[in-house]
Amino acid sequence: MTLHSNIDQHSGALALLLPLTELLPENYAPYRPLLADGLAFFLQRLSPDRQQAIVAAQIELPRSASRERRVISLFRLCPTLHKLGQVVAHDRRLSADLRQRLQELETLAPTDSLAAVQPLLDREVGPVAGLQLGQETIAEGSVAVVVPFVWQQAQDAAPQRGVFKVLRPGVQERLEEELAIWPLLGTFLEERCAHHGLPVLDYANTLETVARLLANEVRLDQEQEHLRQAADFYAASPDILIPRLFPFCTPLVTAMERVDGCKVTHQDLPAAEMRQRAERVIRALLAQPFWGSGETGAMFHADPHAGNLLATPDGRLAIIDWALTTRLTKAQCEAVVQLGLGAVTLNETRVCRAIAALGQVVDEARVRLAVGAAIEQVRAGRFPGFDWMTSLLDSLAASSAVRFPEEIALFRKALLTLSGVAADVSEHMAIDRVLVRHGAGSFLQGLLRRPWAWADSRAVGGHLSTVDLVGLCVDLPATTLRFLAGDRSGSGGLAGRHAVHPGAEPSKRSVEGVSCERGLWLCKAEGLQ
Image 1: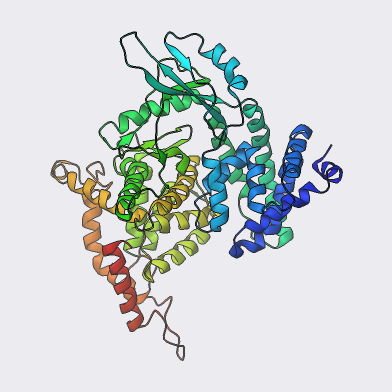
Image 2: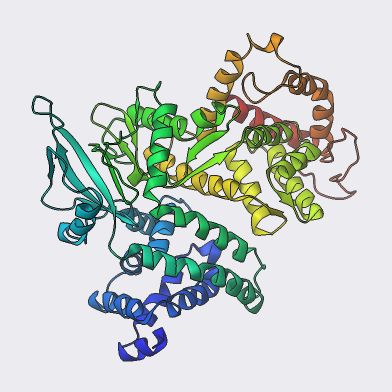
């Protein structure tokens, strides 16, 4: 039985789902028919039992239920859609009402009872002396349910509060079914792009990559190893809390410390303290691992939605749910810095080299075109920080000009989530401000070691070598010429690729415009606003 036959039988429930595409922002309106096609394609390939469950859940809602409420009902029954909803829940491009609804997916009241997961706990953990389970489950995520417990290790020891993280019954099968559809969906979307007159983007490769990464959600043994690594990394940060593991973890059950707190986005403090909280989030999730990466690279939490980031009563940041992580190599971190330096010096060639170090260039001409447009944004006053960089990488990936490895794709996804969460904590704390400050601190800490390091070594702070620093000084006159002349080639020449034609109106390329642009950029560079 297909979903369409179910719809005929159940008074057009799909007709209630397809208008969900109208939730796309107005600037993405041309993509609404494509989203409708993709949604129908996905649902029709689910098993008949799951189709019926989705239809039944939609019919149970009042006829007047909002589109946002119908989205949540659908996403709760599909773990991959649930996860995607969490990723975009703080994306400022979406309406405030939709974001608020999607944020409900971050912390859900459980629908699975303790009785449903008790057999798994009995089989995996078995009897543990001094262990007492709670009476009911207390939370639910996209793939797991949380069961509280108290453990008294010895008769004279203080009781310890913990939780079991257990996979929801049937979620592994549902996840496998959905992940098998995603690569097919990617190819289908590419075909439908031509039908709707839309750019043909690399949906197939993107969705296949994300599908492989989401498969790690059910690898609880892998998450336990990530928790151990994170605990070691943040051991010297007293304001960061990583839940400690209990000794009765198994490959299918994680037993860890119970953390009390609220979502970091909860506005429970004065504005100044919320800014400090936002800075702590950015520093812990991005600045510390990026600037602190050694020869083994840097591990990043790849699912930093607000449900995984708790503000504890004593003012710490608790980072939970380490199922999804990504690791950038030292060379990749260095390439990111080189990309930023290329943007600061308006050097298109340097930016292109950095991109080639981050991924496989497929269309060099398209890369140079995209880089040239991004450099123009810098010249026009946009600060070349992480938001600028991820916009450039996203455009290159979407146009299939560059194929980025999985770790870069997941890093970009984590940045998207993190930027939205940080903005919802405090709009007055920019990611770039925190990154530059900690990058400067890393650079200064390495100054004492720099005279004894090789000139081309980037292991002495800030992912910069002495050769990089000398090159920046030498390139300063060429940077000035590129800025004044609008030359994006990176050669420092005065080729007027953007010269004002005779009779044309004065543009931002005029002397007055250049002065205004330079003043704006310098203000942004100084204040990082």
